[in-house]
Amino acid sequence: MKKDKQLPEDKHIILFDGICNFCNDSVRFIMKRDKKDLYRYASLQSELGQKLTQERNINTDEVDSIILIQPSEAYYIKSDAALEIAKNMSGLYPVLSIFLVLPRGFRDFFYDLIAKNRYKWFGKKEICPMPLPEEQDKFLEV
Image (cartoon, rainbow, N blue to C red):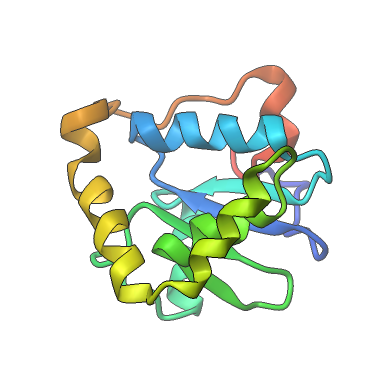
């Protein structure tokens, strides 16, 4: 983590798979639609990502693609995380939160299908790519 950067108290933290092409593209997609500037980002593989998941007893062998941590220390995983993020995006994306009425197991079945195949379908990188200069303030570790 940057020496002078502390965890923001008023921001939601999105932990993502830093080597997954789909996950990296999803982060950039969210950034473009985060008009309220609510989100900050860190890879699950980073020191901070590991620390935050350990503090919350999140098993990253079971949840290895996206985690949303709110300022209140509450957190969301899998489809809950994706739909909670969509609630705060600009455009029509908040409408997707209607899927929260569906049983979590049903939603997570489809989420897990994509997560399980994301490397095969979208590829992966050997290392987590560096954010663009204009994105660096949004990332908690660079």
